[in-house]
Length: 266
Image (tube, rainbow, N blue to C red):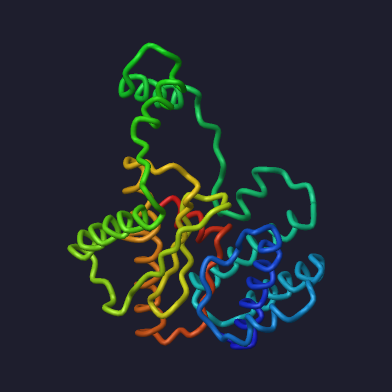
């Protein structure tokens, strides 16, 4: 793989990410690569969307001429096509929805028959007791499972206990790197319930929104999704098997495209 091309690819992802950060969001889910590239993006003036579109098209053209394995070329091409479409959206271009979804997520959107949703609602009706409207019954169930802690520290201690229990269970079927670890922070004024950022060196930072009422039934799937055996576990294994064993030193995981869709659906 051409190192200059790869650096341009990484810079493109980081530059798009900087535009998302202006809205307190993210495009890059995790970055493992030269620190100087991050500093370049941090210190430079914002680059115009049209110029980034030109850069993306140039990378696509150069990729087509590269002598690399077809599956690798196809993967990178889809990543670039997705970034090209994201930049069009950021540039306020009007795109047909199915075209946007296909190019960004590499899936063909299909109409889901109403009966599928009706069958799902029937399951809720059977599982939630009462005669009130379904949304009222769901809210009553939700309220019943709230728990108020005496302090944020007490809530954090309990969450750490759950994290450690899920880690034990995960280690029964996945060999985790010995040096993996977490930074756990309780945060406020966020739009998410919890968010995990992989920092590299087998370490992740998870932020848990202290503003959201604590619900026991939602905690297990939340922690499983974010940490064990979810995002943190996946990134640790990728760092071990791609970077340590295959010596791939430049990796960027992009959130709002194909890779991110697979992560969230997983």
